[in-house]
Image 1 (cartoon, rainbow, N blue to C red):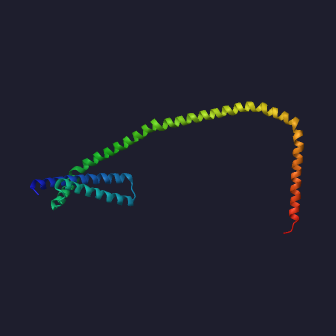
Image 2: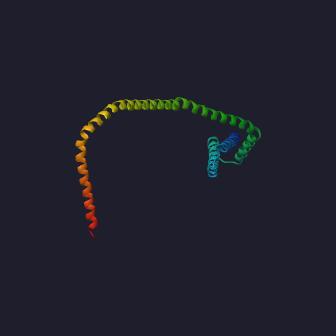
Image 3: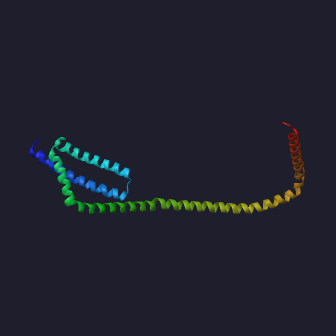
Length: 192
């Protein structure tokens, strides 16, 4: 490997160290904001280190065909130290502003969707419901107007023809009651 290749590898590992530090601060900030459970924190930690591994070895594959040397780890450590000493405070301020902007945008989008979709649907539902209630009330009122004369006519007809119907109905009812009594006496009289 040439001296130019080694310098390029070392510089790319310093950049990877800075990126790992930024990724670490981003992950920790989001973890604190989301209040994850313990087992989920462990899973996310594993995924964090797995992604850092892919970042480092993917960069190594592009820069020097995946050769691992001792100065690679020195470059990673140097990059993380540079990040934590010089860039961390500035990055955390930018990260918090970015997160607050994302949350603000999310709330604005939800509010816009509410006023564009949910509020018109609720208005339409209430409007249709009030129309249906009004129509049913009107139909019941109109039906009540038609029901009064029919009821009056039905009572008059029942008063005149009711005697003709009541007498046979009473006879049939008496026959069923007598038959039930006879069957009950007969069943009680049987000994098992």
